Image 1 (cartoon, rainbow over the protein chains, first blue to last red):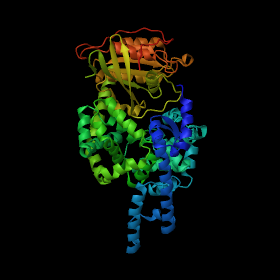
Image 2: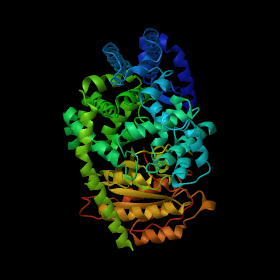
Image 3: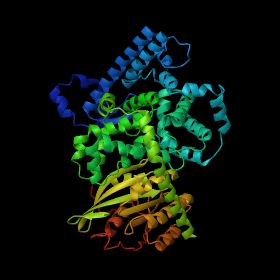
Image 4: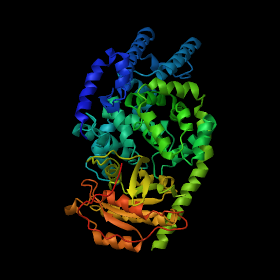
Length: 395
Length: 201
């Protein structure tokens, strides 16, 4: 399309000049779409307002970094690694109290965001990845990647097919080096858990993990802890039964927490899973801007998979007024897509997710999952039987 | 209801099904935006698009669900084809397995889908003639036996892409879908050459 080049040039111009634009000019130019790079190197489209928001986010990230460093200085390096309560009965009550206080501080702090430089270390410790890694020999990942090198399975073929289709155009992920690293992580995992093998969607998750963690091995362990400990079981296996369960739990929660929206969408015969399935399988990485996605992941790795529900509900909640006046499937999807793509300020989303949705505990979600599981299994089973009978007829 | 009619205006839900990497998203991107990307992001769950076509006396607004191709995503498919007025089942002419998968989709739609659904079979990547594994004749015979209309397409060169959607638009029942089933006329058209369909955006 003509004019693209000049738009890119404009983007650079705006990045440097946006701060000094007069409000009147600013608002006039706000309608122009420009392309720019976000904090993790992704090219995104937005208007001048979005560029400004992203610059504010950069500044907030720096401030948040200063908060973390100050805490390191006052509480000691790696203080956040010792917040687990109840470990070892030898702890004196005063130590227990300080651990509890630290845990509360940490929860708040993480909801406000982990600075990108600290993310690898903090995620690795708090998610349980470090512990998982410590239970196997030091050379586990190297041995695994060497052992599976050159092996061809259905999973490796699908992985190879998806490598160039995972965030194409990203300055590192879409290079031979990026493809090779992503390949090793995904292939290694497909051999670690043959029930999962490779599921489309994991390519995006693993790619972002690589960008954050910097090393393949750490990205691998983060992927392992995510699939084996953080997310619901069977989210990515065979017929995605875990994902089906999550969708049902989500629908129930939407009906409870955002009743008007749920009623309206139901009247339009709109099944919310049409859009939320991707959110749950890619953990928002295909819908939200990268820093916003990673802020969500910050909390997922500390508080668990219930956070996905908070965030998904928040996206609907934020746009309640707009959603209530939609008449058509296309309009609903437009509202949700535009909203997610433009959520450059993670705090806009997370404030709603944690302050306006009402608390949900991991326990509540687990109970809901247990309730939905039998029905999901029954449906999937019936479907398979119908399809099998089809095959018999065909013979 | 599958296709809803106003005065000469139709809304029609259309779903694309087919094996991973057959080119479902590329066909949609070509039809909706006139673009082609060598490496199209893999689709997770499904992606939604809409596009309007003018056909004879009517305009048809397609609401397109482009679904994920990996086999395990199969279990999500009913959500997307439920209530669909039309389906395009896509295979890759350079990949025989993808043709087998396409046949499975046809079976499933015949059993589970809307009985009046207009179903097209699209043999994509027709530009890769030297790597062909599925002959046009084989697919044409299969389509004829199963009451589908068949075209070979290339999202890369745009050959026949608009035509598939245009043909579907023409075949959509104009009145209540239940009263007037879709035609089962087979279109025999050479694979090469792209003809411009009257497509308005």
